[in-house]
Amino acid sequence: MKISRVRLLVAASAVALLAGFVGVVQTVTAQGTEPPIAADRERSAKDAITALPAHVRVGAERVGLRLDTSRKIAANLYLVDKRDGQLCMVSTASGMSMGCGPKNDFFGGSAVHYGIDERGSADAPLELTISGVARPDVKSVQVAFPSGPSNAAITTDGGFSITATKDQLASGRPTQLVALGENGRVIQAFKLPQG
Image 1: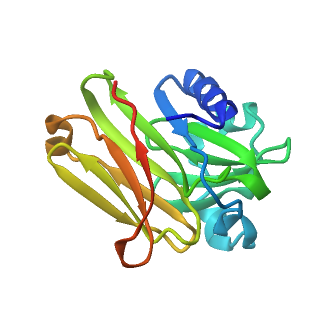
Image 2: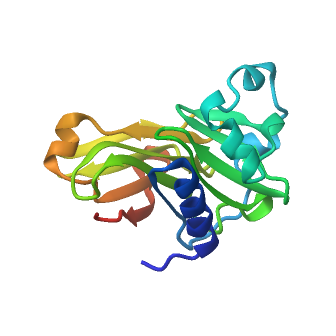
């Protein structure tokens, strides 16, 4: 699978090093360039209350995030503007990881922009969360584990988050993320990294 946004991986790696954990962010070429739903709405009073957690704010400011623009879009997941004009998806599931892109081409043609946060070894993670932002035509996502699939609905802001259970992790790493549209139609499938 060809990764079309190497800069997202570089940004995610730099933030992962600052935060001291492993994070992977991947976007794959497809069709569609609209910005995330939450990027076009006004920031609400609720966004101010659920702003980036205190333990990641210093690191977030250090990498150029504008904290006054954060919008919580799913569990442990935020959209935040960066001082250089880019829009960033920031996960706080395991410290802080992020991937950024231009607001008007945030998805880079992909159905979703997602990241994987994990703790433990690559071969046997102790915790694993897959979260991301989806285009408006994506209604749910499904993550395939060896023990069976795990599903998540898309929030009204276009976010999603799936945290693996201990039983799912015991069965092995997730192998695929699938973006689903109306009536369960497959929009795009992503092979997930294995270790």
